[in-house]
Length: 163
Length: 183
Image (cartoon, rainbow over all chains, first blue to last red; front, side, top):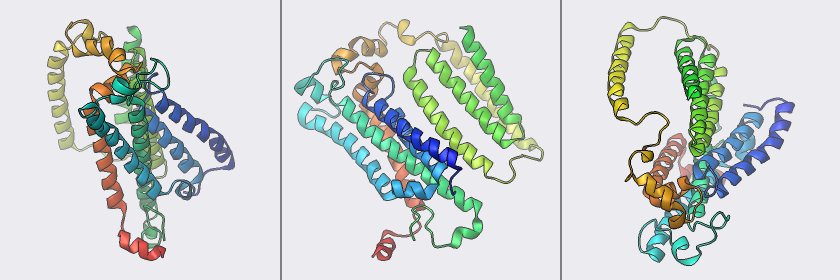
């Protein structure tokens, strides 16, 4: 995959920022408007899929290496479990919304409200975005091996692209 | 209500074309049309959360499928269907159809929420007390991240485990070897 024409590259270079910001918006306002961690995470992943289709895999590999994406994935899962576990420490039971019930109730319909729900949304968005990015990257590497069976023995690693 | 029948008719037609057409790319596009019809239905049923998720996953899946389809050399399916496989498929579909009739008899009518009919349904409690209990204006977020947090944890675990498996299987060289190469 070498990427597409100049027109596609220019347009996707503009649009990728908007898609990424829209995903962040969907995640951060997940407790106020429709959306949430899962949908926002998929949108974040799709902005990188756009880059992957327009510029090729190597460009994305430079932008967001597989190891970093894998760490973001683990970080999201860890943060989600951490928020749930903090409920045990501060609220007395697993998954209790301790921030809202005890410390900062906040005004309804504000951005900073609803206690741990926005934190969980951010964690899930990070997790889902990184996971789907990894899944699509893995699928595209499989696809390349399908395309050029004679290239299976070369020195490039199919999943990480490292020598 | 008529719009749902129009959408349903559209989706059924698209599904039949997706199965019957010989062109793989056309089949993939028809599958996408089914998904977009479904997301429009969710939107008209006042479920924007599910509509957003459906449309986003649908776009992503469609891109992957098209990308996988158009790069192959032969996108046209030739040859006849297998007789035995067709008989088995029709039999399974018949069983599902008969069971589905039984199931749909006990469901409430299409488009009427179940909490409007059962007064002690838990969803009524969520809608009434969701804002006071959790402070989240979006009831869906308050359900999936507060009332039913365990469900979301299980879902996240499934995704996490599957991605870990994928990355491990696709890693053909061990970590030790990669470190040796890096240094």
